[in-house]
Image 1 (cartoon, rainbow, N blue to C red):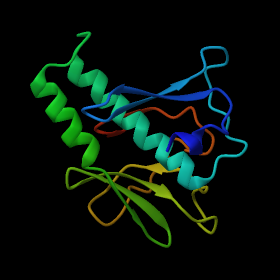
Image 2 (tube, rainbow, N blue to C red):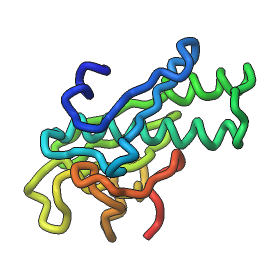
Image 3 (cartoon, rainbow, N blue to C red):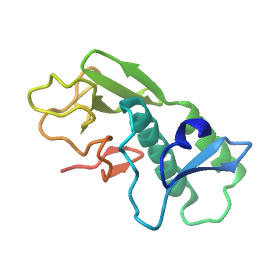
Image 4 (cartoon, rainbow, N blue to C red):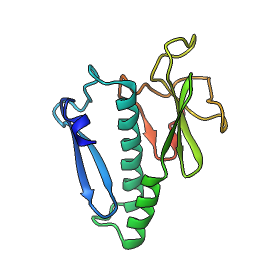
Length: 150
């Protein structure tokens, strides 16, 4: 996976713990943005999933420098629980058997742009009131529990 990210300026993937397979995505402190000029939707969704995992890591550690054995197990289980379900209109992000959110996967949507992040209204459909950001543009606000509210 690291090879896929090497072409993006200022993006570095660091393996924090080989046993738990924790990946941390860092964006350069110089400009604090990710370069999205060559970013495909698939790469941008992968970047989002890594940001979700990093937020869960931060939440689980509660400011501690090192995770406990229980924390390592919880983090590993969380990281392994992700799946992407691709449909004709949306990419559904599923974690631990629950829907985290949806990404608009088509340019034919009349209300949203390709790459928009939508909260889940339920298992099968997103809340179509307003986008919570765009994975292709960057600068979105998310948590491990889901996209932030408006």
